[in-house]
Image (cartoon, rainbow, N blue to C red; front, top):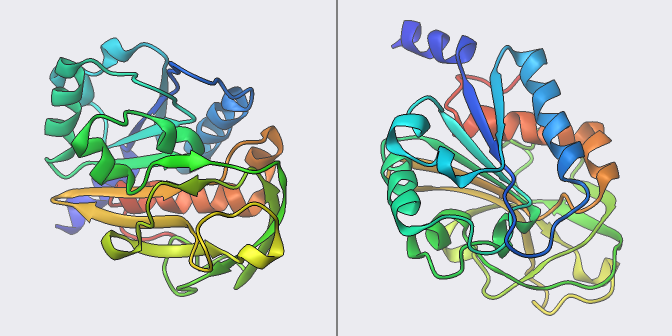
Length: 231
């Protein structure tokens, strides 16, 4: 088991999927560059794909982790959805960033994987995030109250009952939340054998240069990819 885990560390292959069928964020290129830089530092292989033709059983089996980076709308056809679902159920890892929650509204498995769908957002502004489990390896590096600026999503439903919430917005710290006092913005969970991590942050280009955000994504990839430790 140890030998297998160590092998995974050195051969982690990550697919960053950036197709959009709706709004397209101008921060996508910054996000892709961030993941590539993290991969270079960690020894991962990072591949970007804009074409959904990458979603076949044969092509997906190369990857331990798939990142939906600011995807929007209906980006996969039924065959591609089926291939992705089969891939995930084999114990693979999924990471959704920001508008990954504004993607594939009619696909039930994706809805389970992402945890919650986008509903609305106010203007970009500073807010305070409360880290709910400071000991969790995905966010142990973060301050208990994390202050930063972004576009803060409200979701169609509160995902708390189905996920482990890692960070929630202090709704009195900014204007425009429609979710009441309990407003998750970052979480992780397992869907069968698949691991999933979602962050509602990531609208702005500046986000991807923030050291705390970058480290969060590195740790999230390690967790969903089953890398033994997130140091």
